[in-house]
Image (cartoon, rainbow, N blue to C red; front, side, top):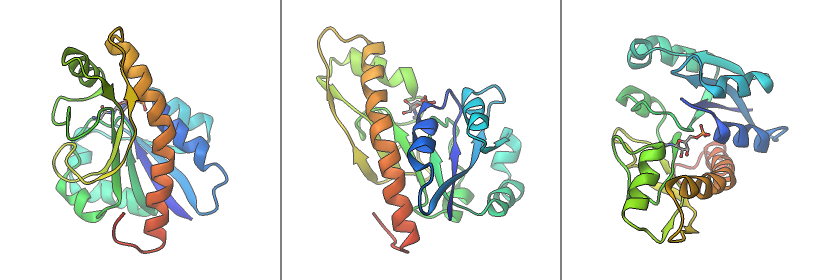
Length: 196
Ligand code: GAR
């Protein structure tokens, strides 16, 4: 099995979409859910599916050794960020080359970078009267939202759409494309290909 760790800070609807999609998968398995918030909704979803959880604090996360050992012990080969709001430290990017992916709720390279997460993104899209939006799945490097793009999906926005309507439209697309992207990247890692 190729073991996946999902890192999430919030409700975890993307995490659950991925878990459901990969249930009984031939060679991909969601092995671990990591969260930086002990009350994050994603932890309840993980328990419901019988998946091991790990709550980390900032010091542990940014201190190389212990956390990397935990990931190694769980034999993690792919890290999937699903609403995880801490910047990934360089040692982790180096330890998992092209093996960390993220979903962002806008059409990168627009509306990315520090401070651009969740509702802030949809508010900015609304303020700029954009006619379309949609999620982006991308590789993770040391800079927020700047790794190579793997997959995007688009939806039309209506002039009457409020930020919460935009968020709902984009989230629906996230649930469709992220599980597929995880499967594609998982297959590439399994087959030993360097890139997607
Ligand atoms: C998702 O919309 C995801 O794109 C966003 O957080 C939400 C998590 O929802 N991520 C970012 O904004 C990262 N910059 P979920 O917890 O229900 O999956």
